[in-house]
Image (cartoon, rainbow over all chains, first blue to last red; front, side):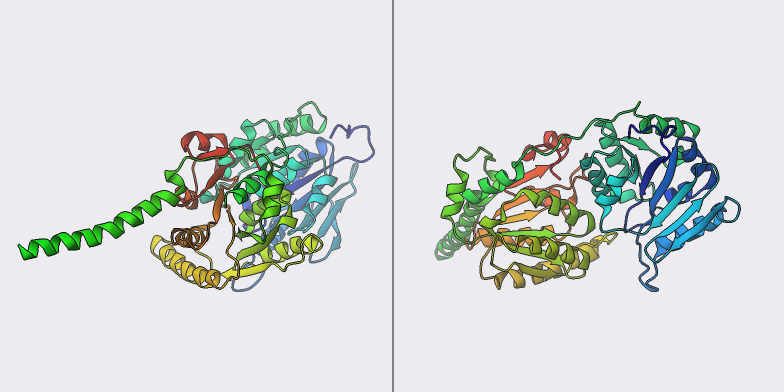
Length: 219
Length: 230
């Protein structure tokens, strides 16, 4: 996280987690976008990893999230006019690379069983406000930006994002604000180590184990 | 005169059992008793003295399963046998828990039990159909539980819809004196300012009610808060 992208030959790596069961359409559309990626490059980012989701259509058994990602990719014009070309494509992962300037890679995958490995490899995570993803990132002490999904009314995403933001352990952003110039400044600050988050307290050792022991002793 | 005596006897005959039931309820209802979370001095000796302590763990789905598996990481499994309760459609939780069980093979030789039950209250379900699916779930849970060789000593829940029929059936068994299961409810980390419906319904019958955000423990007297546990 304190690596200076201007000095190293390899830039920062960012991971975006959009949730597994519901496609976070507005977030995917916002980040699979030439202007957004240009903004990342200007902050010293060289790899963007996007986990786009695994929402399966009940009737056709197709992956709705993947269809949405593919559609956004076409609309973004990254391949046609953006200088990107596909260098790898399987059912699991798509990799696009651009050779201009310092080079940039976009990797996209639906879900992965080894999410911890992906989080460990990156310098910063932008995540939807699901508690699972948030805790995965915070327990690995990676800088985290949380984006709530406005379309999930019953999922308390805004409440969760606000609550974690107020602990000072991450920063809450709306999808809309990710496109603003101020986001680039913020991102740059985090990647260069001028903005530092608090570390989330670990649960007290053996706390839950002792609760269970206490209850067993009362049976 | 004769009629009056009959009425007297009849009302006594009706009221005494009701009074007995209420006394029994007041005796076992956690909400009617003071919560005690005082430490136990020598825990392991107590555990060692008890044989065949079973923990029943409900795995709801996606987020609930993830939180539960993280929560129970610190439990020392050599002391306990396990009964996992899962939704019959939830293959992803089943494979996750089987993976956990594989890693425990050396710790405990007894095979874990898996109860597959229909899910109560699906997402976006209306009130009437929620009640119906909860009833169906209640019946199939009761049929599965009465067949178990050992009733659990501890029931661990963290809020999926199926928590409600499962906990109330166990509570019924406690009421009838068939088991002394301690019900431990941990509210989901996703609940910041308000309890889940399952949480509200289970607050009176849970022996321990643990929340993960401080405001909830200020709002509800019986809710305990120790920080984020997952």
